[in-house]
Image (cartoon, rainbow, N blue to C red; front, side, top):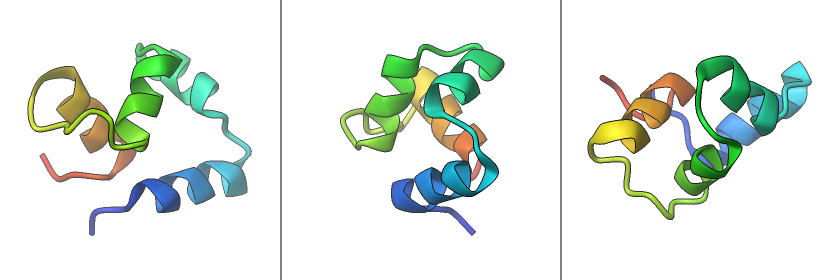
Length: 60
């Protein structure tokens, strides 16, 4: 099941993970991860899609 951005943010909060920390651990910039979470990047292909898949927002 794909999660929404709000569900991803809630999961991070529950687990005590910041977006900055997740981005660094996964090799992305915090800015780009926020663009995906806030829907400013459609995440249809490329890096945005890759981030969305890793966040659990899209299936591969």
